[in-house]
Amino acid sequence: QPQNQRNTPASSNMITPAQAFLLSTAGNSAMCVSLPRKQVTDIYLNGSQIQDNSEADAGWRFFGLAGGAACAAVYLADKNINNADDRKILNGAIAANAIGNAALFVQHKFMEDHVKPELRWLNLGMQAGVAGLAVKALLDKK
Image 1 (cartoon, one colour):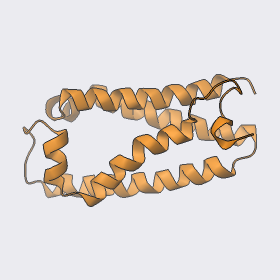
Image 2: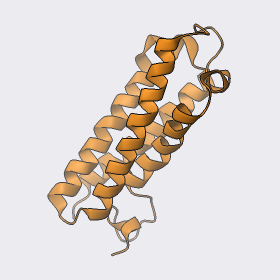
Image 3: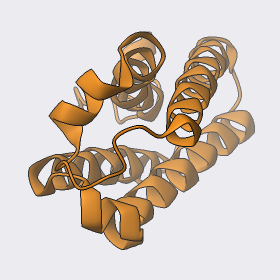
């Protein structure tokens, strides 16, 4: 069966939870590692945050590195899993991660106070979509 249909019914053309995770995480991770923090914050934040914050910059870079490693791990797991139990574990981990990310975008004070609303809701929607795909894959009968 083609890789892009492993986690969905044969009649569906949806992307897999792993593909959704990769799409939602890889770009953010690369941006956090490679771009100057000011350039990113000008796009993403509303300007009320501390402008020169080495702690936030370090956290930004660590997120980027961890996200990159997570993308590599999810890609390899998705490519090499060949039994339903392991697939459920992967989809459960993707769902839990995306639900946690969505919750942070909704409830974390920094997100509420400093992230531009349109980018906050865009990221929330993206994470809700990833979670939805993963939960759907968990509930589908194989």
